[in-house]
Image (tube, rainbow, N blue to C red; front, side, top):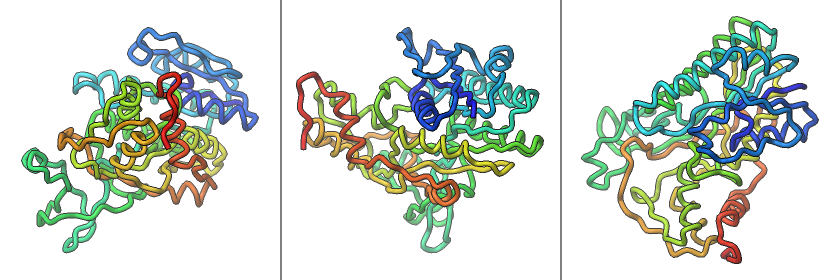
Length: 352
């Protein structure tokens, strides 16, 4: 296939480009190289692809980039939390307007295959179970509990402690910030496009992505890059809350392989998949492993918190495995070892 990868010069996009080229596809990249993303850095375009600088919000750029392609792998987006709600127009423009422009032009040119990047953030606090009331979705945590060190969400009906459950793709969605709201809107746009045109549209809800080439100021950076920065500065890692928050950390090469698998999907209509390792780990476990490989002291538990953080979020990749044959290939310790090695000062040996 001839595939357009939007955002193909970015952290995830360039890995997607590599995976598609390795499978024998022709690849064209469209990337705006936004100043707020690259901050004046020089950009190295992916090798082996046809590279075009352009913006998915601009119809003329999208028209030119789509000519002659068979499928689109849509990675272009404003990512991360943003600074505050004042960033909402940027996120809505890049994510939702950009997706609408892209889909309109795909319909006009008769291109009927789309894979797009979504996010675990659309689940909000995820799925929990109360011993008395069964499956529940807790609301946001309250500051009084967090200040007192009570970090686990409570049942919205009886205030009892809850047990986190694995989240499937069909649970109620509950994004808690602007980024999450715009990612969910992207999904709705793509689903409506597929229903109206009979096209094949696939969304991949990425979990906590990490891997080589990830910059600390990237919107994708999250806790893994924050911890990696301590390897660079040779300072102990500070753990928020009690360090027992649970996430699913997935290597960027596994994300790229999931995109390649999704592009092979032929059934018309809309389908969404979690992309996760399937092995949840605590943030404290991640911190201790990075500290060990980086030769740092034991992490320090601070009790600090971010008010809009979720406590635990773990989703099942079973649908992606069963329907598209994808499986994660990068073992956690191997991936983190590579990630830490990238940050070590010259001449510093990895820890055991």
